[in-house]
Image 1 (cartoon, chains in turn purple, orange, red):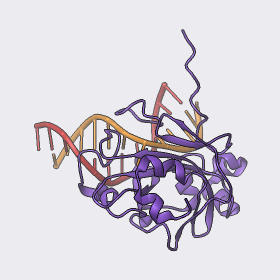
Image 2 (spheres, rainbow, N blue to C red):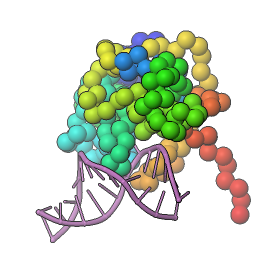
Image 3 (tube, rainbow, N blue to C red):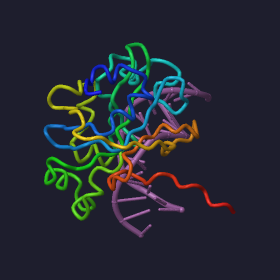
Length: 195
DNA sequence: ATGAAGATGAAT
DNA sequence: TTCATCTTCATC
């Protein structure tokens, strides 16, 4: 699927893996998405859980907009709002492969980012810092300046895994990664060794 | 009004 | 493992 509007209008569990490989740019800085997570209304871990109120109202709005929130008082995190208006679903963009605007990213990411390109965008907070995404982008469409989502140029093999940092709803394999990408925030969970 | 928790990241 | 730091939501 190369039509963004149709993609984000669909079921978030389909949209999330399909977004892997799309290039995300903010003012021309970014690269292909390699890791996302899906969140939906019936999911205790989702900001939209329990209905539309306050800031999360954007998750219930029209698909294709950016839902940005503050994490741990420090980081910004970027989501792509999905599904029809009235449904509170979104895809958290967790990591991308740094491809365009490398020097800008390194400057924004400071010490850690300067020494290893894998530390530029591997994590939702790192990614927004590298791309300069903040509260100012909350509610902006992802298909118009300063934000862009460009269809993949090649095929990506996508792997499903459990989400990260979730305490309220465990087990759902709603984290989607580009297989073998060195730019994901964390490798796929390996089977737990027996005691 | 006030407080605790949280879809994180960096340093120790 | 600790801690930075702030919005949202629950409770008083």
